[in-house]
Image 1 (tube, helix red, strand yellow):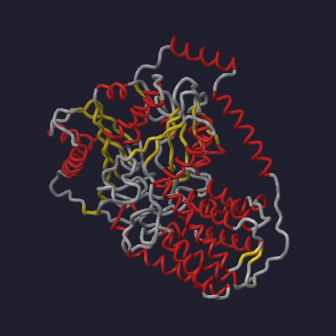
Image 2 (image 1 turned 45 degrees about the vertical axis):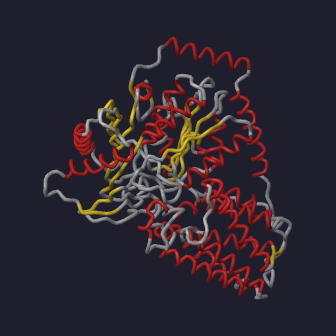
Image 3 (image 1 turned 180 degrees about the vertical axis):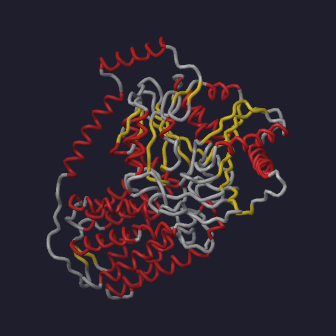
Length: 608
């Protein structure tokens, strides 16, 4: 791997600092990895988007006049945490409200939805839309449905124009959903991409092969096929196939108008994107489809992947005007700037509002300062473990703390192997959870260790904030539910441990249900395939009167068998959900991770 970088850990921070340095109208809030406008306009709806990094210029490159007010940056290919999103909402809250533009991925939906719920409880006016333009996920049978890809940029553009014009939140949301209903995308790839933390390509592909229908995280596509240059019409033929699929899915008719977006994945030269545009333009013209505006370039990338996607947006007069509306961001700029008179009027309005101290944002900022002070005071407290670790037929609090510490060590030691196991997902699983548990160890002294329940709930706070992608809400909820079940307990027996695991599984289930209307169960090819069998085996062992260590061995064995069984399952939820039957033959990365963790912990307990 050759990249301009310092370390994988500082990769996103360094990039965001560099972006802000190049564009002084923006600022980077390092604590929460938020790129935002320095000045938030209190008289317009604020637009917030974001997701995993690695798609640059999306999303931070679209922060500016006429598009986004803030972008929340996760780690590479990992959703930002709900804590990051929540703080972004607080920093951008206005009287007119906030609209979240969310790409339809499990981690993004979980974290943005949870943050929105928290903000609404605080009295902030906030709503959301979900972009799902990727028709490569053919029938929406898997995971949360179709992925949000390059069409997201056009949602940013039109909703941003509506917000800039002063429209109300309900109207801006209507515009965003109108774009979502009328935009479709399809991508293909010639190479994989290389996640900095992994250090090698996410998947291997032959020099004469391509992935047809690939995602923006290096996920496999609909299928793999040979590239045929023999007829001298490869670009035209490829474009014809994709345009036909897009037209059929969108039910596009002859004589209708579209905006065409030719989007590079980061590793394809502009000359090839223009060749692709030539071919796509000919295909649309042959079908009698009129192109209102063409946009060519790198807008929603996949780090250094060679390949591209084609997006078409059906437009009427309203959407044409919103697409054409002036915009000024690091990655997209066109049209005349707003008049000096209009800018001066807006500045005058803001000055009056600030002088009278009536802007809701100032109130939010004051509340945020109080909350931050309280958080800092709590963070400076040190919680000591009283007593020595003891494991007999019970586990006391000091021993339980050591077990979780060992769990963190196992996760950190397996960061790269867990990434490598994530072959049908984004390739970032190990990095996502290791980040959270590294932070947990760094903040170890601040965790409440008075009893086992307090300790687990305290750990959940760090895990939710720092574990990337869907891992934050899923693992964080598991710890929180387990902790609440153990509140007040300074020692636990096998029956307690079994109940703890059952509650952890319930936490995972409820988190999925809240976000997608369906929680994961055995057979869906998620970490539940290891977690629930382990919990059931522990429960059975306790009911049969087994000794503690024997019961833990049986739980670990059940986790292993459950993880192995995922090799034969078709993914219907979780990391591999978008590829469906192509996931057969591979274990689920989350289930495999729990298998390794639980078996290592069962061995460790025998040494205590």
